[in-house]
Amino acid sequence: MADPWDEPVTVDPPGTWTPELEALHEEAVRRFGTSCLWSMPKRRTIGGLRAMSEMLRNYGGMEAWRHADKILKAVGVAAR
Image 1 (cartoon, rainbow, N blue to C red):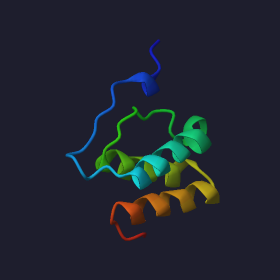
Image 2 (cartoon, helix red, strand yellow; image 1 turned 120 degrees about the horizontal axis):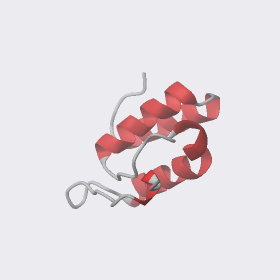
Image 3 (tube, helix red, strand yellow; image 1 turned 135 degrees about the horizontal axis):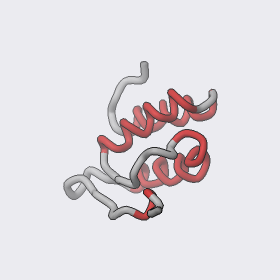
Image 4 (tube, rainbow, N blue to C red; image 1 turned 180 degrees about the vertical axis):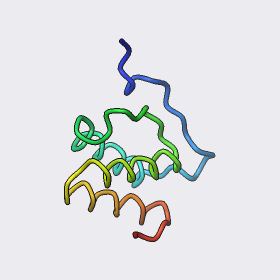
């Protein structure tokens, strides 16, 4: 079975995907990939980060919740 993290990477229009977003994405995958992000394909998009933050909040502990807040703030969504 193919690893979903090996799927082609999708990127938003130029200028929307920043080094900060890349760092947040990579940290989430490294820290919470197996516990929270097991069903997510590897897509580097703003929408993908929003979905990632939802998975972190639903399936992770307090550290995952805090990381989700960092992601949402970075993409310009007010934390709930």
